[in-house]
Image 1 (cartoon, one colour):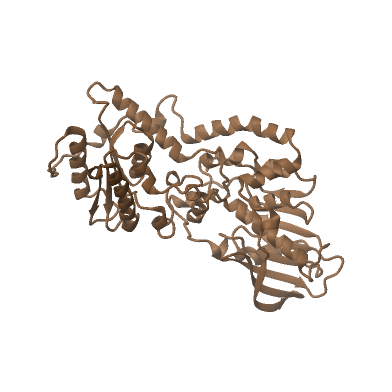
Image 2: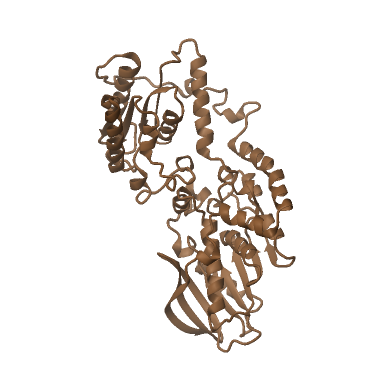
Length: 477
């Protein structure tokens, strides 16, 4: 999250490490620095793909269990680890084949497995595309693919194949290699540092340290931007960075009424609000039977979806005022709209909807921007409803991960949104960058946001008293 918020990426750090690794190899007297090969599996296959495309010193390359195609990957298994997702990659038309095209006609071997989650169909599509390019250049023999009948693993046939490939192009020896019996090194023999962790060495820095330093370096220019420009200019930049469409370009909201009931002296509608193609937001609306001049609409966005609606309603101070309306909306990716649920393991750190987040990220979109659009669309829709009316005050109340888009919406629409209450959200992105064990904050990360604005800037852009902040803190593991 820290790298995304500060406009860099985990990939950038790893590519830098890989390049410095080649520097080290070339500094060794026993290494021929003019004959460099690179291979690795999974995340190592990712780094191999980046290095072979970006560092001309990589003469021969063999990425394993990574090369497929985004056309196969994104709709099926979905995006994976952060370093595999470059901001706007899909929007810019960058495919896996381009990592090979950028180095053509240098020798490149794709190592794939039949039953890998990185779809084998995409691997063959990419190979065929690269093969055509190499053939047109007159070097068809320099691109090849091995498909081992295995799962996500550096299998025997791939290991043997990569050694043969490296020998062929780095040593001029073109013959098969068979793997014999090997004795593994002991754990102590594997250690490259005294304690096995670089970070435990004196003077070492983590990626979090680098992200914090970058966030601090951006703060002065960010503050100057807000001090030197008017509200219209600063909010236009917010809209641009969060990839929000202009309000007049947003689709009109339509509804599907699912059921009608009575509850606590109000009419209850269970419905779906359709804000965009394929997007339906579960909604529970408690409407006054006879709205009047003292009607207030409480538009509530629970961060965990409608499961928390009844509990939030029960503790609301205006519950007994039957002139008030309460409308609970589950934004995309909350509650039952979550794509996948990860309660434990590594993905629990970044959040359950990390794949949907990265699908948007690859298209240069942000969940914050899309959710903010939804809130603004619903506010506009309520203004046209006869039960509410144009002059009815709208109080927005948001909890958890819904607080970040709710704050953006308040800044974008200070007139129709009379007041905004944010409960148990994050106080700032700068605090998130500095939190080594922040929980579930990927969904609210906007690429390069801290170069231009932080959440307190949005609060400060509003008239005093327009926003109430309650129990704001970064959740941590």
